[in-house]
Every structure is written in C-alpha cells, then in structure tokens.
Image (cartoon, rainbow, N blue to C red; front, top):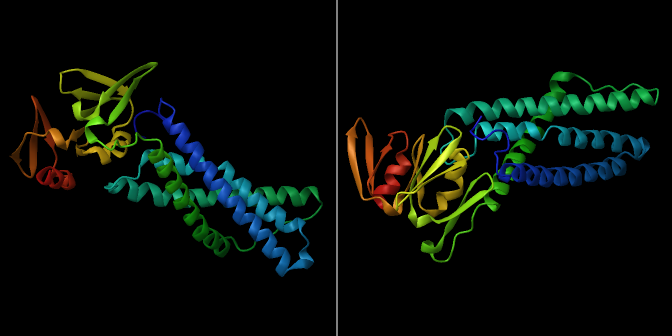
Length: 271
C-alpha cells in the first residue's frame, strides 16, 4: 500500500473515498430503481416486491463493498504510467469485487426469502457469475474514476499567474504555505515526503509521493525517480550517467533521473 495508510493523514484520502463512493452509490441507486420499474412494467405478474428485493439487495451489496476498489486504488493509484502493479492489482480486485457483490446480494436474498418461508434460487453459478462480472467490472471502473476525480477536485487550483501558485504543507496541526516556484524538488522519506525549497528550507509532510505527483503534475512537476519529483521550471542542467540514467541539476541539488521515466526526460528536454 502507498505510504500514509488507507486514507492518508490529512483527510484528503477520506474525502476522496467518501465523495467517490457516494457518487457511485447514488448512480447505482438510480439504475437499480430504473431496473425495478422496468421489471415491473415488463413482468407485472411478479409484483413490485420481488424486483425491489432483487435490486435493493444488489444496491446494498455495492454499498458494503465500495471499500475494496478503494484499497486497490491506494495500492495501485491511477497515474499516467501505471506499471506492472496496476496491471496485476486492478484485474484481480475487479474479480474479487464482483465475487463479494454477488455473494452479498445472494446471501441477502436468501435471508429475505427464508424469512418469508420461501426459497431463492440463483441459478447456475458459472454463467450467472460471468454475467454479473461484466457489469461489475464496469462498476469497478466507475468507482476508480470517482475516486480519481474526487482527489483531483480537492487539489490546489492553478492560479492565472503560475508564479502565484501556492501549496499548503501540513505537518500535524502545523501548516506552511509555500510558492510552488520556490520548490526545487520533493523526495520520498519513508512515510513522509520532503519539500526542498530554493532558500534551503526543507519541510516534511506525511503523504505518499504518488499523491503529490497527481496533485502537482499540472504545475510543472514530473516524477524522475521512484523517490523524486522535480520542478521542471527550475532545472539548470541535465547530465547523462550512462545506461540511460541522468543526473538533474536543480540549484545546488543533484536529483536522479531514472531511465524508467522517459516522459520526465522528454518534459525536461522540452522545458
């Protein structure tokens, strides 16, 4: 899992999970309600109660398991360069999410039917699960998109003047507001990130570096190494080290540029 735990420590992760989940649950509720109306219209002999039980149990099961895509999102964030982790984590998590969703609504339906003295039959597990998996995979993608959008909406807005853009560095109850043009680079330091400023000051904040990468990508910061973000607007030199790696000169700071980040090299050469 990325540094900072399941939700991070500044509340941004908790808000992203809450807003993303609420948006999805509201959308799913609208779809389930539409399904109830459609089933009742096409098969009025079923009555309204059974469609409500079927669609309501599906909706509640979604509600119970939105945390699972969130965990996968935290383990493998959506970045322009997702890498092998995302290619493994998200397909596995999508299948697990579908299995939990199906298991949840089947259990609820069986319980409700049993209380009414009846028996609920789900049908052949294989074909039925594959049918649900296709729909749940789409729901999984919607949840990931909701989390990503919620995080983006909570990031600092870009100023009309780039030189006036600021960022709030939070360390517990302490807040330090800095101009982004004064930030040379940001490095990963265990469960923290360290902001290196032009005047020599350094500030720590508890956060995964991947979150800062997403927040600051629109402000000229690029990921050059698994442990470094660099402000492309203050780079003063680029020196090849061999084997495709480079050393970036940023004021008095030397920052590594790994060959695994070709987009960063292209951005630096074009800046």
